[in-house]
Image 1 (cartoon, rainbow, N blue to C red):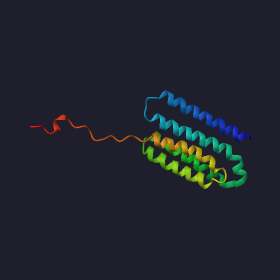
Image 2: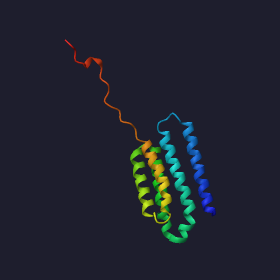
Image 3: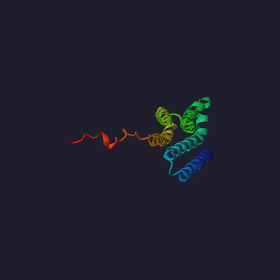
Length: 147
């Protein structure tokens, strides 16, 4: 086990613990689970990127920036959308698909590790779906009256 894997694992654990503490504090808020899962996905993505960085640099050189940058950006965008409060579900779902596609595209190499934060981000997308409210219940006055 090299130093990068240890640093990546510690970084991922720190972000995951912070997400769980956030979830414990905001237990009653409906958006807390989705935000916590987005933080966990970011922690996993950062941990994996830091762990894969030395081997990826030695194998790919300058291409490392986009090979490992795409999962990090795909994990950061849903958090940015969550902080602004705009299109959180759509952004999370789109970034999940991008991260899954990127992991499958690079699946023969180290890309298979990117699938794990993509699955957590997918769970966050599902958790951020708000239930649609049905039509409002009508007053009793609209019932037909029996004669």
